[in-house]
Length: 115
Image 1: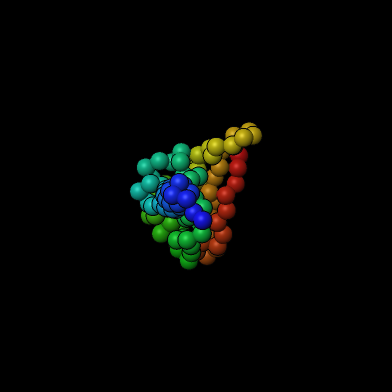
Image 2: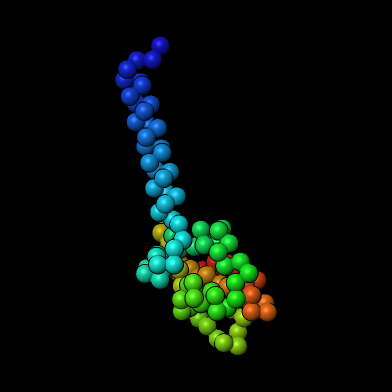
């Protein structure tokens, strides 16, 4: 038989789980505004950028329009490199970069590398 205290504890726990889940999923969503506003925190939203396939089949000009000026860009190169900042870590902190490689001026590969 459930006691009233057990029911209250279960409701509070369920509310905590739901609130934490909603906060997590809304906090780490990619947006162009957030990407351009906070370059040092890009590591927090880069997974959503990659997983959502926002850059799939985009041209170099489209990517530059969405993400803005990169950390590294050579007009003759097939690579754009964006700084992501330094994510929190228990070990040595390393700067991360988003690497976008193009083939025939279309996004071919997206990866995250550390420095």
